[in-house]
Image (cartoon, rainbow, N blue to C red):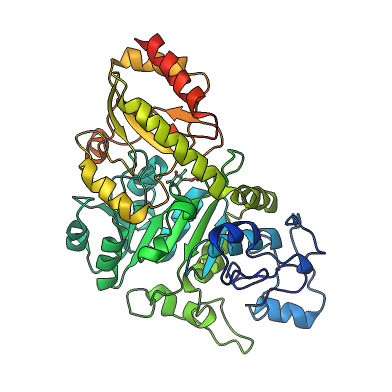
Length: 462
Ligand SMILES: *Cc1c(COP(=O)(O)O)cnc(C)c1O
């Protein structure tokens, strides 16, 4: 696609990577500060400008015709595309090897729900595991069935054959987290991609915890990747946002995805001939359809200022994640030697309650998927009474007690009683989420200060 005229471009098929800025041959760290932005198209502004505008002048009736027939990719209305948001989409696309396009959305939940609606709307079926973000579990239990999308949790999340057995004629996708929340197990993406593709269905990966800095799910066969950009991707605890990224390589014409191949009511060409999504978006069918339908009509658009904040965060993604991994590893060592800790879970180390997969298997998967580190989340089992656990949480000072992860500040929470409280007892049992679980999200502070904070909280608790 073109870089657009003067404004970064990208109407309905925006977010493809080959627009302004170019990413050819650059390393990850160069792409994270440069890709998808060409200053010469924006008055030579060094920092990406915030296009705080609702609409864009149509200028002439002929140009309006082209824009409304999707023949011209210039922006039209900010719900559908905006030059600042467009740079973010191109940059996130460029952070993945072999990704074709992205759509930025107003939250991670919007990214998850639009991706699943796009894959499985009109009576489809999704296979997943019990190891998911709490909000996703709630939506799967209560919202998607209302929308006619069936969700099934497979029997054994660690066994690809368990997924394969559960695939039926209406199954459209396998949905998993790369590093799971909150027990930080590692998912065998390549094995699941093989199962999915054998049956002509999608592998959709929520890569929020790892970020593209630690894991590129497309390298292992994922077809669609979703993010809560609220977390480590933006990294400063000041924005709510999400993204959907696609490989552009999946075959939606196989018969499993009629919603992509049937002519669509509003995608008519200038002669009023109806087209389908594959005709209109041959290189980016998933994000093209998602933008044209779900972003356009359900409307969870990301504002330009929020896109700017995420772009700023991404500029230091590697530096932040590297420091967070070092802090996480230091905290793992401290917790492993602490008598008040029953178990410690961290992707590259394995570990966890006895109900979760064996430490060795998670650590072995981390050797394949997480070569640059296990991320910023460490969970552990508090070995004490409920009363002592409450006193421990009330005693932390430097760690902030809050329902968020991936911030520059270190955070702490008791997921079973907060973020995952809506789960039934059975769901918590299934994913191994015990009441004693404490989740840490490591920030950028000095490791010894963080250890000292936990140490004084343990002392007060006992
Ligand atoms: C936070 C989170 C979400 C939801 O994102 P929001 O930006 O809060 O809507 C989805 N998945 C994972 C893994 C998350 O951590």
